[in-house]
Length: 463
Ligand code: GDP
Ligand code: IMO
Ligand code: MG
Image (cartoon, rainbow, N blue to C red; front, side, top):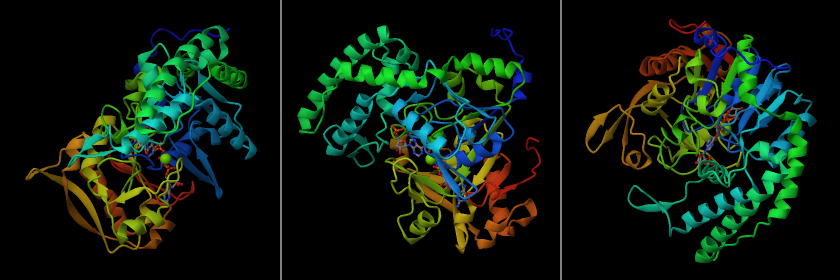
């Protein structure tokens, strides 16, 4: 028999065991590496938002693992991995990911999936693609900057349509429904009728390809997923509260990043969930104020994949050099990432919104060998200088970055393993970030491997 935790676990007790990791830019900051590292000192790792749009690359002993739906903590034997209610789960991809992790010898028997997480169905992916194709065709484009219409540049993983169905309710299918044939079929019947009518109308307007979805076919596919996932499906909110009540250490892993948050990011060029710290509470059922330690993960420069403004973007040889050295190609879609100088105005905004208590500064080795490094510390907007970030895709289009120039450092940065090892200019770069953002940099990453990490001691940093 499981026991209900006392109505109120004391917040101070919960704070001593709960921690979160969030991205501070537009994704791909190296969250997977940091979660993998922190997972060693946690009992449970929880994904609370996003879906298979995320791509977290973790390198262990020369082997590269690409995680999309499974929390990065799974690579630590003994660590339980939880996919919370705020995630949109594509069962097809999840089962593929589980199979590929198992084939590499990873123990996936401690993976749990929320019964209340929503399911990404094949028609969500079709809708995502069709909407993007229509936006690309320009007839229903989002207006940005000088009036150019363009697509969002989604991962086409069905994320937006799945969250939209969750919010519109009647056609939303939850993971628990995969185990309830009686509830599932009527939902699929109505969903297919609505989607087919929508696709037919939209596609006809632009003569785009589309295919009709058949509820009977989807039902048998979905029940098969249910059978395979059944042992993992549970009330993860209850699971987490019981774990916290027992004093187990729980790590919340943000997918995507704060500037892609649907409310706080560069809307409309964002994802469809709260990918900042705000998503923890709604996406897991664990109160946000229980997070004792919040690690904000940032790159030493900026990247962005997909559309939307990025004030410090570099379309030159320096940008190409950073892209190649940083292997800046999407883990999920393989798209080349846009690259730019570090934008501290944006990072400080994200650190504020996500309430970070410490910073992990990643991929510092990628900047090695450049004589000078530019860092954006203010924007010029309509002739006015400001260091306040306008969190809106359209306003951000017209900002001009204002840079400070810092001296570069050499390749020896990649050999650093302890605080004193960093070349002085690399240490100064990390200090500049901490001083500007007002949050200590406690970790500097100088390569993809677990051990290519330097822990810094800074006043005010959590122990
Ligand atoms: P995430 O989505 O935030 O987990 O980040 P991704 O995995 O999509 O992208 C980060 C990439 O950088 C991955 O390929 C990592 O292996 C790699 N990486 C992480 N930290 C470092 C680092 O300090 N230096 C270098 N060169 N690569 C790193
Ligand atoms: P991780 O967790 C980088 C971007 C997409 C697109 C926009 C909307 O690996 O950091 P979506 O498919 O979510 O509707 O796409 O958001 N995006 C990401 N970019 N890293 C991610 O995740 C992302 N998740 C979504 O490229 O611009
Ligand atoms: Mg990624």
